Length: 71
Image 1 (spheres, helix red, strand yellow):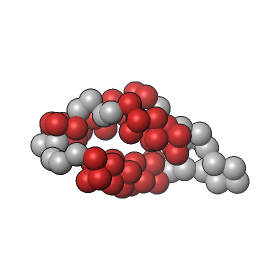
Image 2: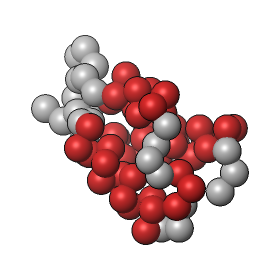
Image 3: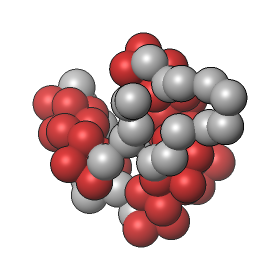
Image 4: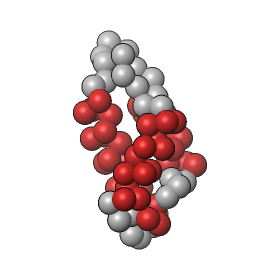
């Protein structure tokens, strides 16, 4: 069973920091809560893969910052 944890979000923050998105760190509370809401629990009748979580989280993160902040 794979889910997103607060520790994984911290790793994502570090990744984006080193990729040049320094103004994104730390993630705003509402973004972290959204990520945990979507990927913090296994969906019924389905199982997330690590790839599902990371690709889905990437889309949520980029969408959040493109609509709320600039790089």
